Structures are given as structure tokens and as C-alpha cells.
Image (cartoon, rainbow, N blue to C red):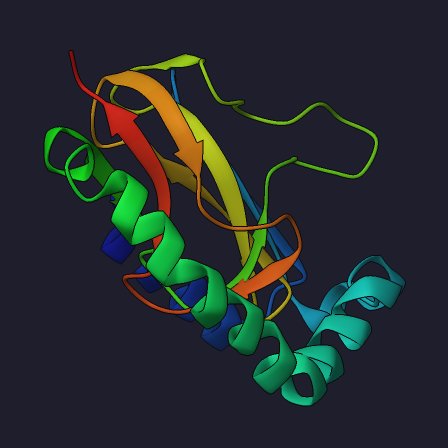
Length: 160
């Protein structure tokens, strides 16, 4: 199941006015909960994340812009051999499936095609992001619980 299928499933579930849908295959599982589920969907964290990026967007981008030239100078020759895993959507980037679980991947971990590398929360739905390449994670480019844009680089992977 690719991201477009997931997005279509989300639209279908929201139009069907059901509270929760679970879809499970041999190697894939997704749970979609809608506001009809009541208290299960009213998380405290998303409310904070929806207001915080607006207030902190300029300060958060300013340090990144200041440090970006340094990183580009160091990594410009190395980046050509790395493959970038990019965000397929706008949302909030999480390295863990939930606060009490371990991170999906760390620097130095081997990933294969289809392995979950992070979660992006968009409109109270947590979307698992799979690796589209095989290799070793060289760098994690986004901080945990940070807002991300469509097509923003998330990870650098060494395919060798």
C-alpha cells in the first residue's frame, strides 16, 4: 500500500463517518481513528503542536538557516553518494511510534525497502513513513516532534 492509497483510505473513512478502521495485511497495518471516536482522539499533544509551529516557525528556521551553510560545506562532496528520504506530506515528524516506545531508526542502523523509519502526524492521523531505499542511516536531518514540509529531507542513507 503506497501513500496515495493511504490518503484515499483516510478520505473514505472520514466520509463514511465511522469512529475507527483497522486495515491489516501480512506485512502492513494501519489504524485510522476519526473524531467520532470521542476521547480517544482528543490528544493533548496535537493541540500544542498546532499552535507552536506558528509561533516558533521563524525562530526554528533561523538557526537552521544559520547552520545550513556549515553543513553544506562539510557534506557537499559526501552528499552526492547519499540518498535522501524525504517527507511525503506536511505534518509533525516523530522518530518513535509513541512516547513510551523506542525510536524506529538511529544513525548507523541498516534499513531496507519498506522498513518504517518515522511517523508523520497530520490532522491527528499518524502516518508511518517507509524507506524507499536500502542502506545505512548516515544522518537524521529533522529533530523529533518538529514540523516538516512536503518533500523536506528527513534522512540521509548510504546505499553502499
